[in-house]
Amino acid sequence: MKPAIIVHGGAWDIPDKIWQAHKEGCTKALEKGMEMLETGASAIDAVEECIKIMEMNPVFDAGRGSFLNIDGKIEMDAGIMDGKDLSFGAIGGIDGIYHPVSLARKVMEETEHVFLAGNGAHKFARKMGFQKIPYEKLLVGRELDRWLRIKDDPDFRTRTVFEEDKKGRIDKDGIRVDTVGAVAIDINGDISSATSTGGIPKKMSGRIGDAPIVGCGFYADNLAGGASATGWGEQIMKICMCKTAVDFLSEGLDPMEAARRAVEVLETRVDGSGGIILIDSKGRIGHAYNTPRMAFEFSYAV
Ligand code: ASP
Image (cartoon, rainbow, N blue to C red; front, side, top):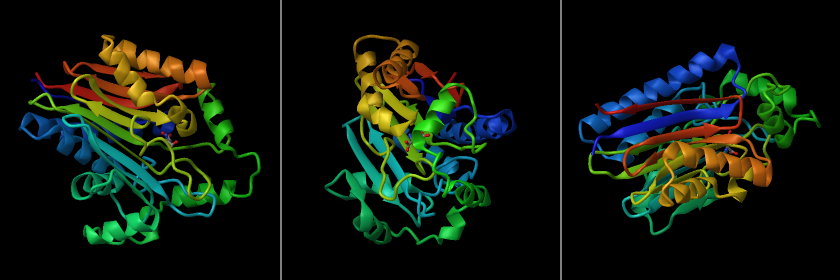
């Protein structure tokens, strides 16, 4: 099998002045992922590494650079899945670590469970040797400034932000950043996907989005394909967007069409906005979004 990989850095009305940084952030992760796949790495190692690179890049809303919630805290979500045996791991509402995606993978590989959140997730992180990262190291000035601007603004609502994005109007707060995702197929035909996010600005404390919910923010099945979604999490969850897209692949749709149809369901059924990336079991790529832009890059081995 010839490996292939696709990564995204969010779907929204990404303004020109930060578009390049988004594209470059995706390219940097993609190059590393492709180099790994070409030298025989597994899809799951490649997607984890891509996400780790993007979690350390403060351009994105994942790891360093995550949005602050209503209380000014960071709460990150991530999920990762191995399409070989449908195993997955997920983490909800974690702080104090750089790489939620790696902790999600530990949940998958080191526990009998699939999803950890709250105090137990923190305890598990320490047990797995994740050092406690001080809040200040995850926080970037841009997000502190944003939080100070919006925390007392009654008009700053999740719905408004995503609706404005869909219409192609950068939200009134000016600049957002976004969730990251990766999907890969390796030389053995194994498919993996992963998604990581700081969620959405001014979210309620304890809010968990689509990113760590299997079938919603991520999904992978060697028999059909893999997917990672981004956008309005509350709406993405209602249509189990990644599983919906992978089901379209199972029905025989090509990945571009499957991605387009999944976004169509998001839009027509729940008036949602966002985007999705896909790889099918033949290594073909798909992508679609109903926002003005989605940052993504992909590559096939030649
Ligand atoms: N889907 C993410 C969430 O709702 C946010 C995003 O992708 O922009 O948490």
